[in-house]
Picture 1 (tube, rainbow, N blue to C red):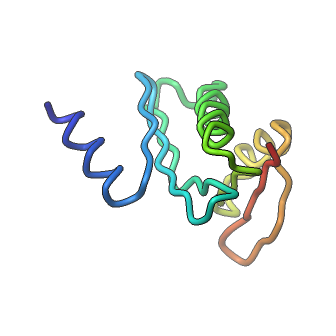
Picture 2 (cartoon, rainbow, N blue to C red):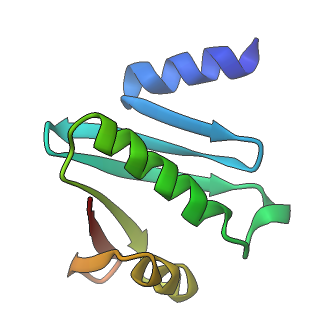
Picture 3 (cartoon, rainbow, N blue to C red):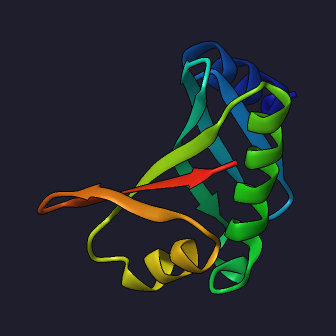
Length: 107
């Protein structure tokens, strides 16, 4: 029951939610040509695995099904290890500031 209410709440507020046994991804579709990933959460015992990458790829499939051309996201500067995974997964840096690095992956 709680999972259903949570999913409904996020979809109402954010636009999209992908839930897996290992974590979740919250995303929106600000325009017709892309999805924006707002948050990725992986439960602690699955951190430092490829789970986040697999979830991002699932969101990419959702984006393709919606006719999007790319997905974007952002990550704090301090998470260099996660940034490396994104670059390895065909994301590219499109901007950065003191706190955030902004990524894009063309579909």
